[in-house]
Amino acid sequence: MNTNPTVDPVIEADNVDVFYGNFRAVTDVSMSFGINEITALIGPSGCGKSTLLRSLNRMNDLVDGARVTGTISFQGEDIYGPDVDAIEVRRRIGMVFQKPNPFPKSIYDNIAYGPRVTGMKPSSMDDLVEEALTKAALWDEVKDKLKQSAFGLSGGQQQRLCIARTIAVKPDVILMDEPCSALDPIATMRIEDLMVELKKDYTIIIVTHNMQQAARVADRTAFFTALADETTGNRTGVLVEYDTTTKIFEDPTDQRTEDYISGRFG
Image 1 (cartoon, one colour):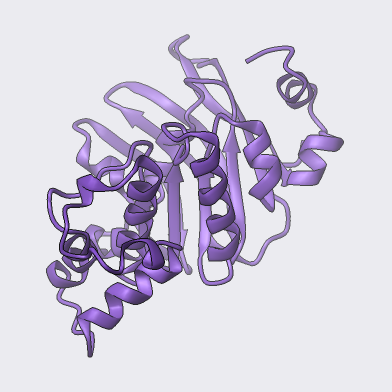
Image 2: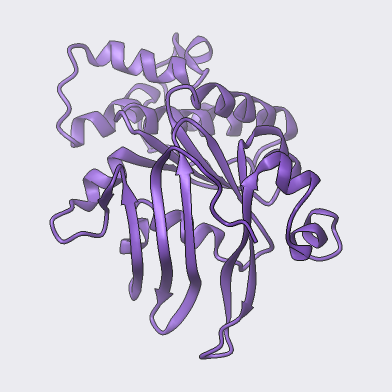
């Protein structure tokens, strides 16, 4: 079983378990995420993909009873260390959610909000807003209506706005939790093209139920499944196989991966 291909890591998970109260949602995950790569997490519902993703920037801290054991390191530092600021972790490791969630503000203020509340002092906020929207492939579509409500944008535009909002605070890593599941095929294609472009500047980790999407955009893919916990009997998420996307889809090592990729289960 290959669960840790050689990468130049920006984030490393070592023997990570994630709990909600007494329920262990993820068990013993060890994997490294390569810099300037797209890594896809795939697997059936309930296998812990999104739980693991949210643990990578301490988003799970916001859930009552959630806790992480093992070690998650970002650029060599344990993000759950006692002196680590969780808010700074989330600035450096941003997140884009399943459904677009623009703030009830103007397009401009959606982008400027993060830099303002984190105390960033850009030489020009206008330039920062333009840069973020340009990187998110949205500037040309909204440059003449920056003062209009973000709710006036289409679903695909709102998701790109949320990506721009994440970019505006200068992260190193962008986490994406099924960012296209609420979008139509054309908007999905725009987001996928954008991800490939963004990996020049960022590391991207994406949870997706769309295996074709993983095959199209990801450099590496990790397959998760759910097994009965030996202690409680509850279903818990485990990492089955992690390798280059080509290897996972064309020549997987584990039969469970082959069965999922081929549609025999999941």
